[in-house]
Length: 110
Image (cartoon, rainbow, N blue to C red; front, side, top):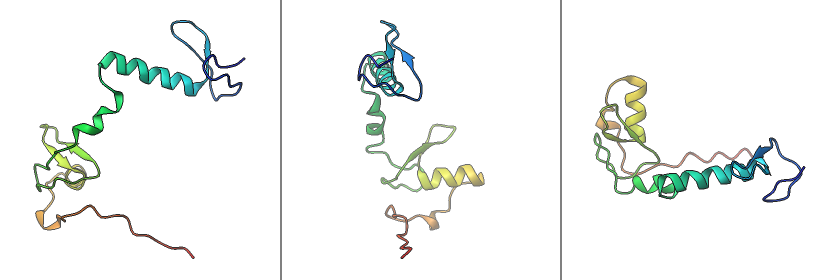
């Protein structure tokens, strides 16, 4: 048995092309699934990342965040404010706000 797209003979799971029923490896199947999703939506599947450009946190006002979150009411929150609200059930104190995204500390084990 071999994949009809890439010709590999090993995969974690064999799939079938939904139109031709030809065997597909798991990786080629995932590519096909993404292509079908793009065609269904009419936009590139990875376009979600562009939605965060120009976002501003409705609580602290920052425009820079590693991840953007939404409240149940639909308000946009930065990662820090959204996580604080979810874990503690109350808004993050503005005294905790910083102006920049901080990188994790670099620990050298040597």
